[in-house]
Structure formats: structure tokens, C-alpha cells
Image (cartoon, rainbow, N blue to C red):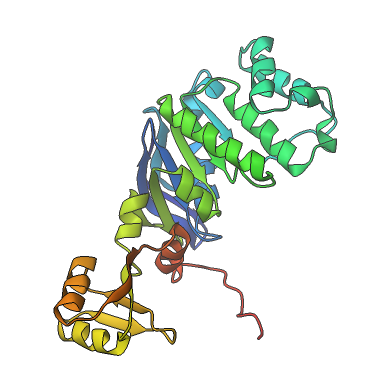
Length: 304
């Protein structure tokens, strides 16, 4: 597993990761979320030993990753798909990594086939599209058949088929009992893929919970109803202490109650309902609600 305890990273008087603690468990896809500048990439670099913490620890399977005798067989990581030597072919790039880590050539062929680059194995990486470089980065991360996989924005540049492939791959890795830590800004993909979420803002932990618990606990969860007399039903609900918003088209958005209470009240007063449902927000809506006060960089509203 990946275990982060009181991790802190400061540059002079600026703290980019602040006493951060979380755990990524085996058999789980853990989504690592936060606005730009929140400290996600710095945290991942400290887990890999590329940056030294100011305080705290980050361990992989109980020890610092830098001390591992077989690093690629301990954790497979993709932080920057563009950090490759463009003059090499895909197979030569992977073979260099394999030789340095005591991995056989057969495994190079296997991972190229696994990520769909078998036909491009002899092509120079410099001629690869962004999506192909992402696939090559995934191949490098899987080269040592590691029990822990850590990926930063792995669907960047992938087409729809590639995104679905990536989603299936990550779920399969977790099903095999591997630990998967995934950073992405695509909330729709995170909602489909992640089991657990770690959300940070300005270097601090904001949430550490499951996707379902995060959405169900959102202030945006409400009951929606349509009926022939929305003003009357809204007044009746308000008397019970519920908060009701009536849209111009007559749709009632109700918080502080549930569907049973709404339907019971409507039936008691002879108000036929045409629609009654629980509205749960998307992960993107909840994420924006959760992090809007923690964003370092926000654009000005678009002109009308």
C-alpha cells in the first residue's frame, strides 16, 4: 500500500503540502483530486523519492521507495508521458528500462501488446501522438508487474476508445489486488473508475472517503417534484421545515425531507404528483462545491 503520514513540503516560506495524511489500499482505485496548485504532483514526487519531504513520511509497502532493491517491481508510475527520449523506438525505450531493472525482453513484448502499441514498437517516440505516449507511459508503469500503480492524468490525450480501455485496465488492476493511485481532473472518469477519493486543497486534506459517501453527503442532494399546484405544495412543505425552491417551469427542488414525506403530504392534500425523484449531484458538482474556497487559480467569469 501507499502510506502518507503528516507529509509536508515547503519552499522557503511557501508550504505546498501541509501535514497531509492518507492511505491507498490494495484492491482499491484511489482517486487523488485537487485544484491546480493543490500539491498533488508534489505529493506523488515525494512518494517516489523525487522530492524530499520537509517533514513527515511517504512509504510504499512499509518502506521508502528509494530504498527498494527492485523499484519497477515495487511500484509502476507515470507522472509525465512526455519525459522520454524521442529518438528511441518504443521497444528500445522499454528495453532500456527492463535491462536496468533485471526484467526480460519477453515482458517488453507483453506490455506493448497490452497497451495496443505492438504495431508501433519500432517507430520513434518523437513521432508518437500524445495518446500514444500515454499508452507507452502506461506500458513502462506495468513493465515490472508491480503490486502498486500510481498514475498522474493517464487519460490525457486518449480518444474515447482509449479512455474506456484505461477505465477497464484500472478496474482490472484493482480486482487483481493491486493498489492504484490515480490523479485526474476528469471528474466523469473518476466517478466511473475510483472507489475511494482523497481530495486536497492548498496542500491540506479536504476529504478522505468513498465516492458514494461524498456524493450522498453533499448539500446539493435534494428531492425534485412536479405537480399541478406547485405553489400550494411548496407552502405545505415549508410548514414542515423543508427548504423549497420553485423554478419558473414549476419544478420543486426540496431539501430537508425525503420522497416518502413529499408523496405522503401531496396525497393527504389531494395534490397529484407528475414527477418525484431524488436528485444526486455528479461528482464534478460535489467536487466544485468542496474545493471552490481552496483554488489558487480561478479565471474571471466569461463575458455575456
